[in-house]
Image 1: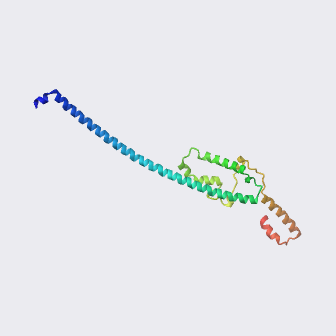
Image 2: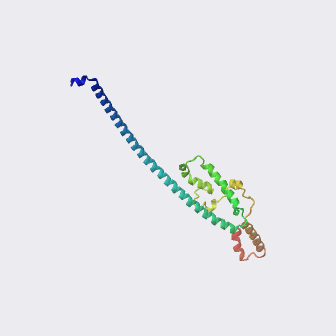
Image 3: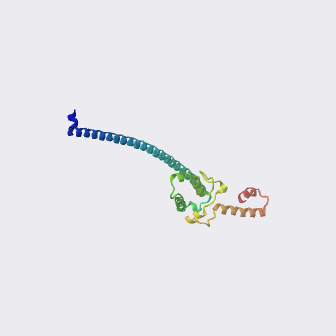
Length: 201
């Protein structure tokens, strides 16, 4: 045994084995660390994918809600345009090119409002955007109450909406008022005056 201890080759063999064992341990630790890191990265990836899916579901839901809301607005607009066509066939807003111009002006105005904002910012300002679009606070779905309906003068001017149009209804009511005054001068007790007065006042 003493011969082995004094043999330099034996010493080198022992040293080499110790080194190999140390390297093997280091490799094992590195492998375990790499495996743990991969597991952690894999877990993080699952969390990120879950978060992204949740956000995409939210965005898809918001997009669906927006599509449905726009469909509702289009429905209201169609009915109002039909009523306008019946009441005032010469109204300039029946001209599609003019309505397209009004749309474009409002569209660009909203683009400017939303510039440099994220979807979370915009989600928090939905009511503010609706109020601005309708020109009245608390305006949802079909728009404001009758007493709060006002034109957007800046948009009308930018879109080239004529300012001098007098609706046919106003002309007709004015004519009825003149006829009522003529009738009243000849027959103040005429029964038709009762019906006419509620339209001209």
